Image (cartoon, rainbow, N blue to C red):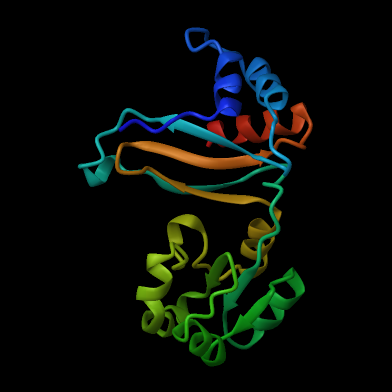
Length: 196
């Protein structure tokens, strides 16, 4: 049985011309006009890359730092040793640790959005790889979360870094801002994402 479309969604769909190709300015204006929820909605970009997801060489995984952020407060956990711990504190990391934080993760206490680690800490993260990996939080050099430059990685994560990868059908989905952003901010975020 087909899922019934709500009256609100029907009204919104009636305002969109499915045959028309919208310019970036028109698309952003349309998104702002169609705001209907009582909360600050996320603007999401969906791209069909026309790649075959069965071939690993065609899969895409990367990250981009949006100039105006995503509008979401990000909680960053850092795994580092010695001087890198101080570097992470200065950069504004929310959680910094090693064995104690690993214990919390093993107990299922995951209260962060991004994990950043130095290469020498990756062997310790192997103990919680199944937990972090299933939630998409395992640090990865391709997304810049395994690095020796902890300060830059934390600033990027806090400043609106978006990680993306192709899904099972060859599409990319990413939040690029909030409806409350100005049209110029949304356009700059979209252009930066597409340029990547």
